[in-house]
Image (cartoon, rainbow over the protein chains, first blue to last red):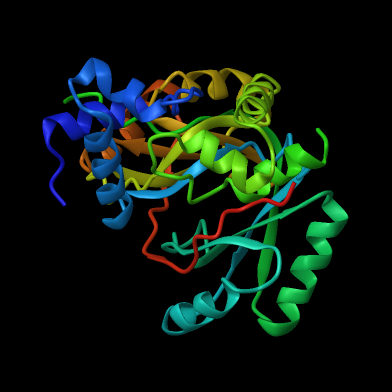
Length: 158
Length: 147
């Protein structure tokens, strides 16, 4: 889907979030000269086109009690990554699962998944379960500190 | 945070109504009043449980660039380097992790070609090598959290 200049202004206005009011879409569109039904139609189109993945509350997992998160990285041979990735994505505790490149001599891991839990022990137990099914060499990179968590900024240049 | 707040978080992570009065419609589905829902969302945002209420954009589909990058930062320079990295508006997340590569951050840009520029600028600004680990394949997208 092609984004018009108007769409981009809408995207930009929305990056701070939807106004928490009775008629948020009307409020959003007013300064852009867009009527409420036009705003709704454009947002529907963006969701259908996959430009917007989800629409609702965006949570901070730490504040929700998910205090431990590990990026778990697996050394899976290239020819097996796709199949293992598809299966691992459905494992309990896995929220995201991606294939990424090796960096020979520095980084051997081809499959990355995020595992969130209430504490470190829970994350370790979840990963141990996953590793029983997928016995590849792996590492748990726990996050010791979060420095920044913000939404990406789009539509700056309309 | 009470039961109603938890309900709000669990049921409103996706599929918010695209109707003229979405908060009224969502509140009805939750069995609460519209002004109660709005007040609770304001409070959750003020308490930092929510980063915001609205869309989660798909960077690539928006025509933007996105990558995960890592650096091996000497311990005694860690704070200073984090400060430099975080000044870039394109850096969306930045986490310290326990590994020789101990700083991991997500870079999201409006245009794909800007990713390399940002990584180069970070490398120049910190004097450290930046490892670019772009996504080659994606297997899931159910980033939901139960409250």
